[in-house]
Image 1: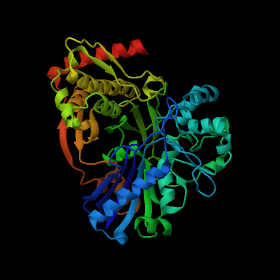
Image 2: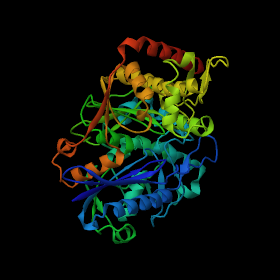
Image 3: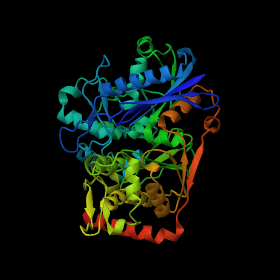
Image 4: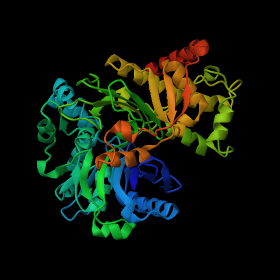
Length: 494
């Protein structure tokens, strides 16, 4: 018996097949091998064609099925996770009306700021747990004002994972977690927010049926079964946005538990059991995967847009003589803690929520042509990303998060010893690395959705811890001095 996980990222789509009883990964693949195209017609814009997600899902799925040799009838559940906050619009025939406005697109910031003031800051925060900000609801408001001919044709709105589920099943649904990440969910009244839909003029008919995060949400249609080589009727039994799902993948379900990622963007995500929020909406609070109105489980999310994308930019535009990120890490390790006084502010990927939606751009401070080398810049970039995490984690601590242990997958920036040691030492938290990823987590969760696993403890019993990183207490003063210098430069900018 096997379970499939689909992870719809902004860089690639990953597919994973696990054997249900052991949790062992049988096969996994991602597509494309180069990063998926993000279209930016204007500064601050970011769009992708959802058809590209489907095409790359099929390619990765085909490779997994071929490698594994598993028969379609032995696959008993499908889980889906996706890049959060994207907007997908379809007409009554389920045809796409425009490209998806994805998570890092900042065009809707003014719409969210106006809604925050008009609806009332306290009411937004106490009911939505966030400012409407630059999230899905505000993106839809932008479409209404700027593309009215498209708005008039809308039958349903979706998030990226809902689109994939639609392609698999022909049915459209959305979870409470998805509604909350779009800033459509009223946590006090446990329903779609009347304040949001009335302010933005969104017809309630745009919202699809609410489906459970875990459970039989839909089944694979005959058409999709033929296209993918699956069995018609295979259950789609789990879906969640990438950050709640990443926390799930690391067995983070309960209050006080913390997860982190450091891919194109970076995230620290912690679970709360009460309706808390940051009054400036610099960190955001959404329904966690195990949220119900009766059992409050909320995910407090710190998102840093300018994370791995900075490292990627340096690789392709600055460190072109180095063949891999490992080579970059080796060169960065030649520079001491604090990068000889060099500081890099990494916010070069659009408006940053942690900075109250300011777009500061990336900047380098303190460079000296006589003492600084390529390695110093590479280390300063990684330290700058770490310091942006610590800046945001201070906000999380102020609303009740106790950050003592951070769980992460052994991937992306966490592959760098400089990054993880700096993060541990600056935050004074232990970092635990696990051999998992979002697609694996979605597959395990699909097993929970069909009832194969009785609970999360059983589903994640085989999760393997591969490393533990402790703070370097004897060097902590050096890390904190570098952080203070970095923070001083940031405060001058903002």
